[in-house]
Image (cartoon, rainbow, N blue to C red; front, side):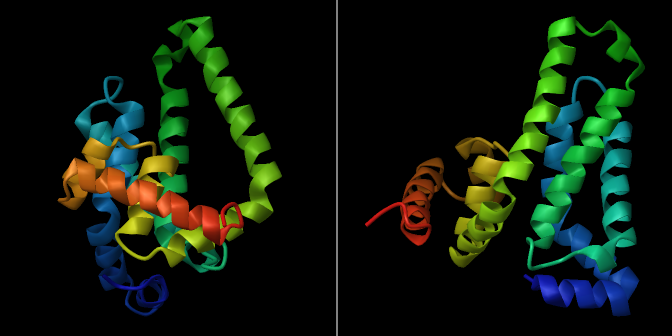
Length: 184
């Protein structure tokens, strides 16, 4: 797999090849994030259009990606989640959503903003610690705790057994605890 630095350079110097590499590496992840948010409300074509919008936006703002703040994968995941939420909100049927669903969505947005403000500094430290786990461990942790994927879904995507995923999660959490000063 191509490194984030190489991928950014490729996006800058050979945009078509860089975009193809970006999509080859992260299409499944972005599709999964958007599908999980929008399935049942939107058609397959609408979901695919939202996925395309994510890659367009990342390509458009490629010069603003700061690898010191996180990986391209994390940047893509955040953009995908935001695009899916924007599309969800634009749904004309939102006027007919139960008030509890609207309130829950509002609380989620407020909680996300407050959480982001409070954890901005420690987030960078955590991302660096997760990156230090290496692949596939860092990807497993991101999928499990940031993207809230089940062990079964992760195992299917990565071609590993479910119990292997669970063992890796357990071991990685212990490593992270030590790396971040929470363990002996």
